[in-house]
Length: 163
Image 1 (spheres, helix red, strand yellow):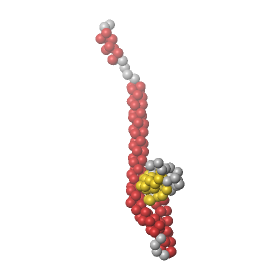
Image 2 (cartoon, helix red, strand yellow; image 1 turned 30 degrees about the vertical axis):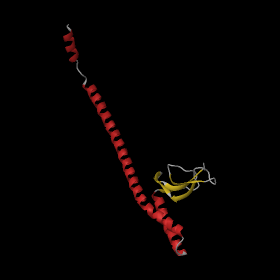
Image 3 (tube, helix red, strand yellow; image 1 turned 135 degrees about the vertical axis):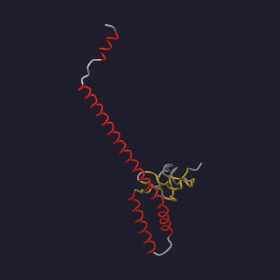
Image 4 (cartoon, one colour; image 1 turned 120 degrees about the vertical axis):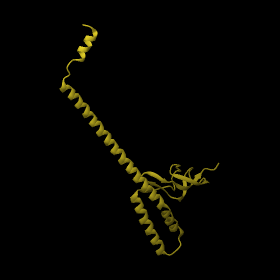
């Protein structure tokens, strides 16, 4: 028998149809599982993007309202007007602030804290021995976090040790 004849005999060996079907079934099951996993990953990614978009939209809405909150704070510090005016302003300010906090707005505490460039914007540096170096002495405009992210840095006055 020659090598060519032996090769022909190998090609003519009967294939078991049940084994072929089992292999095809296993291949199709693997494809189905892979497709299901890809679809679940796609759903998770789309849901995450939807939540991020929603948060971004809320963040922009709150950012647009911050100047109003700032105006209330300045009006409360002005001490112009009678006692009823101040009480009314305080009530509006409290309600407005509470609603923004429900949406995820968190004020940043600055005065008396150590200056942190991640949450503070120094607009004035004052040389003094009366406060520790880099301590925030005053807050000109409050800073805010929104759902754990910095929305606006606080504008502050910072102590610096004299040279």
